[in-house]
Amino acid sequence: MLIIKNNIMSVNAARHLAQSYNALAKSVERLSSGMRINSAKDDAAGLAVRELMRADIAVIQQAIRNAHDGISLLQTMEGAMATIDDDLVRMQQLAEQAATGSYSSAQRTIMENEFKEMRDEIDRIAGATKYNNIKMLDNSATISIHFGKLTTDNMSITGSNVTSASAGLNITGLTISNATSASEAVTTLDSAISTKDTARGKFGYKINRLEGTISVLNIQSENLQTAESRISDVDVATEMAEMTRNQVLAQAGISMLAQANTIPQMVLKLFR
Image 1 (tube, rainbow, N blue to C red):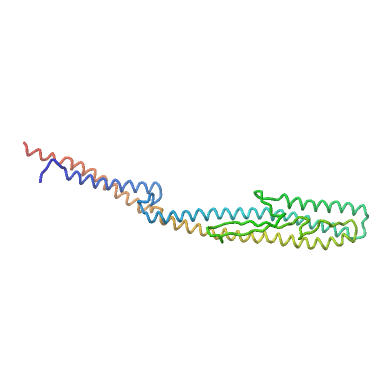
Image 2: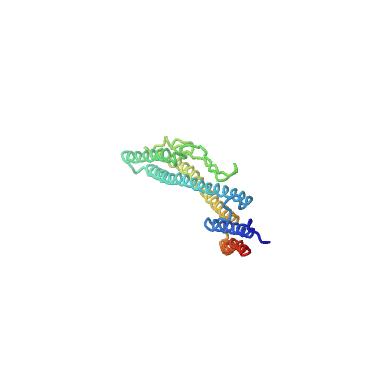
């Protein structure tokens, strides 16, 4: 039937052109963003899963940074303990030196002065060493390094009191002013060094444990990012083929719409 009031062919061609144009716009959006899912209408279920994965990835990456911060704290304390170790060894060396009878009182006084300086330095290091204003060498306070969503995803780190007056070292009253007290100091310092070694070792195996935790968290983050990529990232090859198809359809639609708009003019020939 020939009609001129409604150009059905033009309406039909315009509808198909709009569909091709919308599909082409979606392909351009996906290729320019690199993601298959850019809004909830693209894949509502996929978007929900992706956002949960992104949250998990963000938590894991922050947990990795927390663990690294914990290692930095422990390394700061363990490094200070290395200096305390040197001071204790020097104190024991001085005590051993003063324990022999071949030195005069004046010479022992010089040894005693250095001995006291080493002890004061130990106290200074224990009190001054801190990380982010946290001290762990002059107290037995416990801090927690958190690295996950669960309340069990944490590691407790307890400080060690390595001041001269602490129960472990207990070297405040030591003197090497005479051979007898110097001999006693050697034994006491031997026990103090053993206590210090235990405290330093505790920091060491905590560092090893945190490094292992970081390794596991890195693997978890990598696997989650891979899974998230499979859900949300665009397949460039497939999408390029789809875009090319939509470009052809859009061009054909434009041509057919132009033709459909001229067809009603054929009816005019009947009036001649």
